Length: 146
Image (tube, rainbow, N blue to C red; front, side, top):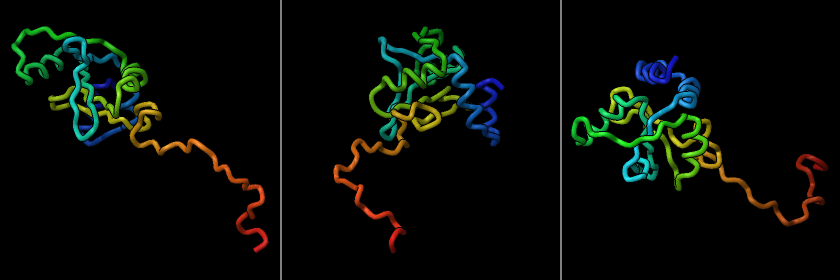
């Protein structure tokens, strides 16, 4: 199925999250830019980068934000894989993707493991950065010698 079909399946109550993320990664999306800045919104501490499946979806979004009909918007056409693997990690702070925002068939790709790289996922447990300095070679093993 195409990305649009996978999103429609979610809205129809038949989600397949792995297929959705896979189709997003394989599909080129449009990322709007204003004054050379990628368009995004902040909500509850997460930046949501806007992405659109086609120019029509981007135009509907622009009209909904008060743009005049026929106004041209700058955008980048980028593979979803590049958005998730390169662009999202390059943005400071937790960042997800809002696909076709403002439409009846939108989808969110939050910054969690399985969608974005683990190093920028908000649900990744902290990594222990140092081992204990105490010598534990003499510690008894639980259950031995009890």
